[in-house]
Length: 338
Image (cartoon, rainbow, N blue to C red):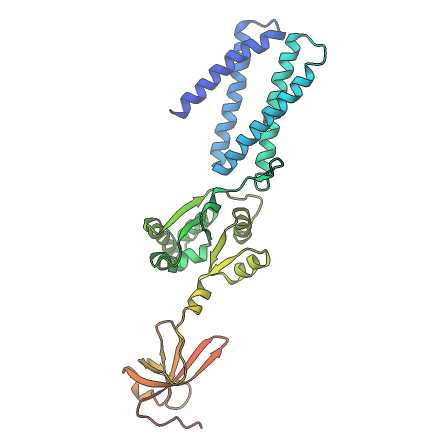
């Protein structure tokens, strides 16, 4: 059914109800009473259309509004029954009932929408939990999307469940993709391409979360707050977001930390085969790199640049910048320090 038919039907029903309710107390002509009812319905339809233009309403927000509406109806019924104990004529009681129902329904919906994040039912102590908790879900940061390694993690099933992309993250990606800076523009377009690849995978469920949290300005703060609301973990490459989230007891999956943890362990005495690509700082040294980016210093390897070299690992050094592996090629004497 088209929404336009629903709106027209609502205005017609409002006109019929208005002609009856207003006629109970006011001796107005029938046409005027119908006009008042239709105008009331038109105001509500205009309000609904304005809300739709301002922004989308999430399913969670709609659920909270429906719950608030039911709560308002119950309260209006209780108060209206109490009003009937007062000696009033039938017409006045009817008007009071309509007014109370209208007021309590509005108040119930407004209160439920304002407190939808912490709205609870006192009896039977049931909290309104979100459906995102039904399975393992992750909030994805902009940096993790642009990075692109999420696709490989999902392809290999190291990461399964639901990936939640907040609408404000998608807007940020679109803004970066539209940047005048070619580097930023390429990064933004790469992020959008990664999202399309994730949606085409069958191993994860990618969903766009519509809630924007307009009361919070910064994207990182929005992510942390949304993760607290949904009870999910955050996937990011941002060091600062990682630390801020941990301070607020939000679990974080850092792709860089995962890559660091998955680097192969190299121990002294093992054999490596590398290809030196440039000269080292010390005399006769050459530098090579493993597939994971680990720097390998080849002793007496300056003459072997560009060749495949098989050698023995002599030592492994862990520095603030990363790990360094020292290799001595087969058949060469130990390097002499100068």
